Length: 421
Image: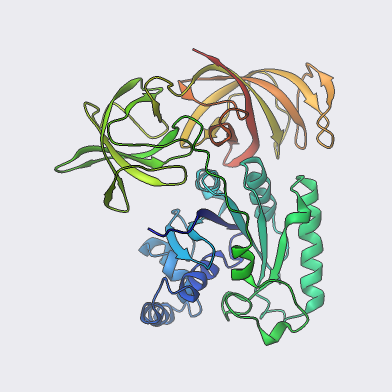
């Protein structure tokens, strides 16, 4: 473990804009992946007729992904810069993988948005930026990639920058804070070293921009909230739930409760990166063992918290949502799937309380009959099965969600208040 402050960094953007190549390049340039591994990948890529994919292979090390040339799983990789110790959450770009992106981005502090210079803002670029904002990602670094393809043209870079700037304003991302860097992940321009090919650019190169990100302030004063990603059975230890601590700390000896499964016990051991630790805090990915809790007692989507301050379970909750895209209109009674932290639960929008003006946030209409794409609203939601969720004002990390239906992200939002069951 590094003694530098830790950040989870999401790499987001449209499919084929070069995210995986950028990740491989970052790991290579920071010494996290040795040269000979890249060489092996290069030979393998060429054999498969995918020359140029060698950096992407560093992340896409699942055979299936190589055959298809797309990223499916969220792979975690670590690298160090002068200021931070980063875990990369490589977010898949393909539409069918947006739900991975949702659980991925909700775990990230800041993000690098990859936009290909030769393609500009694409449909998923919009969706990812919108989700990033709604899920509380702080700052964006925009990597304008594939500059080698457009002959390092300053005009093309400026055009893309303008497109992205407009997009950020539309979703009310604080676009003044965004940093733009012209790069070529494939050639290595402006990633670890300044490139002569972009002599017209004098801003930060990518690693400098990463070093300049604000350090995330750890939410340790909040109670423990640890959404469960998976539950394993490990011989010699027993049942091991795995997840990322969002708030609070987890220590051996703590009495914990899992909600909504409503089981609990005493924490015996806590592991990080296959080593036992005596305490873990926000941002740490942990596996832990709880006395008396078996594999069938808990599941993905449960949240672990202190027994004396357990995670809330919603009978209903009030939320502020923004509708991104819906083919028709949304009315009371609509039941899509809500993705909150690691849970995916069908929920019914029982009432649309207020329609908001998305620009000002003021109430535009009380009890409207419907909402449609582009609208923001306050709604009342009833989960179809138990869901642990928290008001965004109390525990922001467990207060945001995305709404999916028909294979796409319909809306995203944050929880205002929870009516506990």
